[in-house]
Image 1 (cartoon, rainbow, N blue to C red):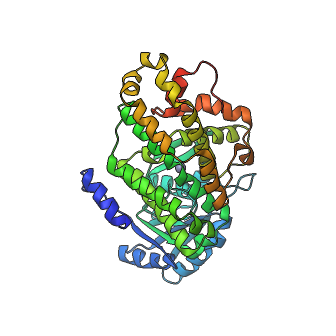
Image 2: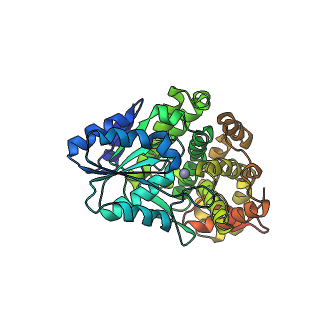
Image 3: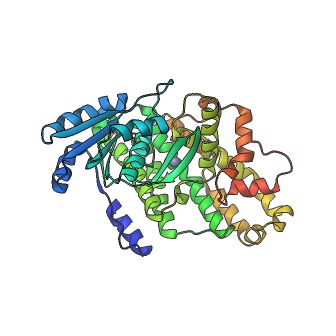
Length: 397
Ligand SMILES: [Zn+2]
């Protein structure tokens, strides 16, 4: 089974007839195929966007190679902030807006998630299609439409455009720092709780759910866990498996037009921590590194506290009372089957990712705050939201 077949089937299940699946290449020298696509489309004016690191990883090679065939190739090197990081904020957006000619035919995002978010927003606003060239297997957002942006210091996810093609060069991705693939694996591991929360939201919150979409995301998760050894070795097989899982998870979000299968309470904790780092003007952490650690915490929280929810008188008086009465035991049986927090930590450790909030550098008080406040970040029913309904004292682990 490949991504095209999976996604085509999901589109037909969802009765979406006009979904165009991007061209996807996850292979050695994948970027060399960009030329064929550009020629086929008869595009002339090309803009490649990268940062200092991704220029060295792939941008330089790409620009030189395109210049052989096309006259108008512009490179935009997004400036780093004081922490040496590229942030998807107003400054970066304006830099790309100013340097992109109005008659550009295509934008190429060369980099990790942040560069993609900047490019997808600009491309969407200027009505220019964009091509994805991931330089690391770090996140599942490459193929989704959502662009998490930092606007006036606050994170906001805006639905924009998905890439028309993804050219993931295996040699480039293999050479990326190990922490990047560890973050991608952490983002995938988060599906244990995001899928559970999605099911909870269907059963208890009466929110929309789609079994086919859930099972594709689950398959991406299970494949990565099965091949953790190969992913940890960053060999060709492992990197292909991880990259394909990330691409597929992104496509599922894109086709649904919402992120529920891939984002639950673990992402809410991660967003909360990200906001804390922004407010205190600290260096940002990799998205998937936070999600991986948050997943171990959410699993621990649910395993320790779900029974309390079933016994709670308080929940009966909420809109969730009936759902808990009817499905609470079943949900508990699903929680029981999740890996333990220690098993999850071992998996993260195996790929070289952080396993604790201490390693991430998030202070205990912020962690406790997030357990008690982060559910407000999105209007979504999750186990975390439900546990917050019955608490008598602040939730802690
Ligand atoms: Zn994520």
